[in-house]
Length: 185
Image (cartoon, rainbow, N blue to C red):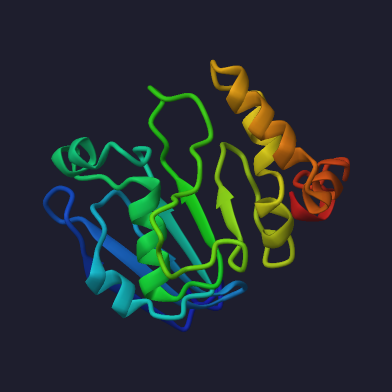
């Protein structure tokens, strides 16, 4: 861990299968990184990693599938964002989406106290490379990613077109190779 400049590692038992733990690492290039692993939402993990600079949390199920998430001991995207809110995380990466639902899930409208517009929320995908300097840009490409996985209804497509009108999203999708720059590889 010295090569990575990690100054402290803390584990928190979480509900998934036997010997499942979330981990909090301090001293990384991101600052404090909290990683949930596969699990149900954990208040203890949120407390242990309070004020994390980056929370990486699994979001296997979409909102509305809380019963199935509980049965399979995973989280919904809204539950993961609630953990981020309790934790007061400065940025969130949602990951581990179910392959049965090939789309980028909408952000939760649960009325949570977290203001998602103030906190970068990133939907992870294979081979994504994040750095402390590209977190904000990564959160802006969600509308473009949604176009790759369109909904069946024309109403959803209209909502995605409206999202693409956001100037910050347009800037992000117009930067060629933003996440494949030589210095990031």
